[in-house]
Image (cartoon, rainbow, N blue to C red; front, side, top):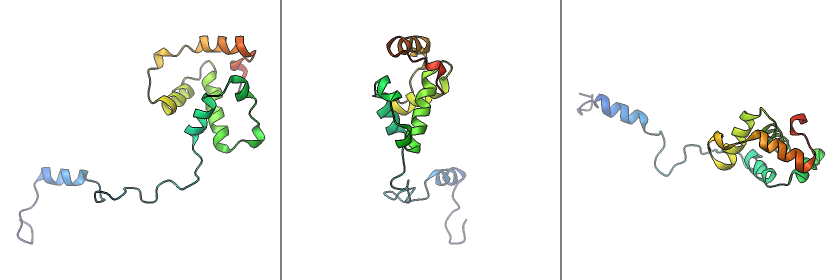
Length: 124
């Protein structure tokens, strides 16, 4: 029994209370949130994924933001044979988690070479 005369909460009640968020319903758990004007990588990846290969390789490096450079790095690494980690990052950000089994990297590399003359394996 507690000091105010009520019975002490059971073990299960204590466990459930520990799982409840420390904020009230309708109150944000992260009141500060992400600062405004924070550059985001995913929108840059989405823009680059919708570019033609020619436009992608013509991006002016001097005018790129740090977020653009990070996104371009992911895209370049994803295009390379052996860039499984970057491909997973890009597809997870753009499409949500998908099966990695449907990606044929070698075919993509051949198509890029065929249509652009660019060897993705030499990038980076």
